[in-house]
Length: 346
Ligand code: AMP
Image (cartoon, rainbow, N blue to C red; front, side, top):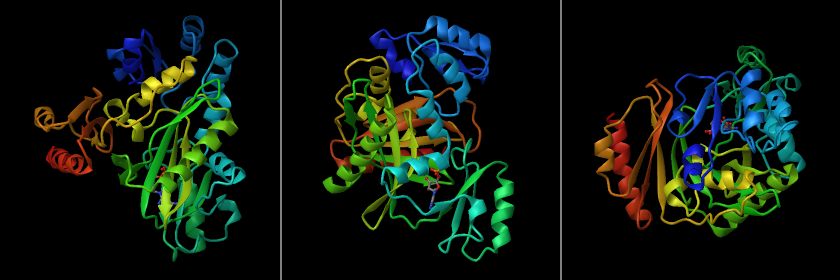
């Protein structure tokens, strides 16, 4: 999606992707190789003006090697923070952003009173690398579940949140920032299902989230797009995760904002002026998970845009998304309901 956004701007992308048949192949030259493949990294260093990431799990050592040869944005140290849930939480704490209570499992004798969610510090995504323990689980259950995750983890208190929100923004190399509106995210089985943009949120809540994101971007001297995932509890915001990259909860911006998150990220990392992040129409994004839907039925819904990633069908895998726009929230919600029904039937 970065390569697609770059094409009309004359940006040509060279993509390194370990899996064969990378979707980026429709719009970019692809090198199929692991992220630490020396020849692939040499090609990036030799041929690119700037290197960036679209996924988080790129070895920091590869980015550090590249950074000695070509500008890497965001900086490897920022990517490293985004890869480690404990480092993220320490950052939030240092910057005064409230979070759910957390600890390294070794520091806890049992779980938290409200229940515990264990998350691998690194490598987990889309709900993988997590385990939940209810408040009555005996102390040894925590140790067992920790071992089961197969790597260092962080223990978090389960939060009875009212809803999940996220805020996306970008910071340019000269320090300029541009932020999108707060959006509401609905998950099931650890996977993002729907994003509603903008969220039905007070200006004060949006301002609080924006202030938090800007604080994180400025502290890290981040360059590029960044997403801050939040829980809303009784009108308060708890920071959950930060992603120093384009984000699934920002896919709606392709049609729903004046500048998409993908173009915005390219503008930031290329040292160009940031674009207008304002909303052009209320939008909803629904992920296509597991199986391909009836594309023509989706395209028959007014205001709907279908994105197919060209990935093989597999349960629990995001293989596309649909964004639907409406003239107002009511029309957006009616159209969203049609899309939900079509996807449920696929
Ligand atoms: P994460 O990978 O941290 O985004 O977690 C995946 C999903 O699990 C989140 O989107 C929430 O729905 C849920 N979750 C994560 N952490 C917590 C928590 N501390 N309390 C309750 N639910 C959580």
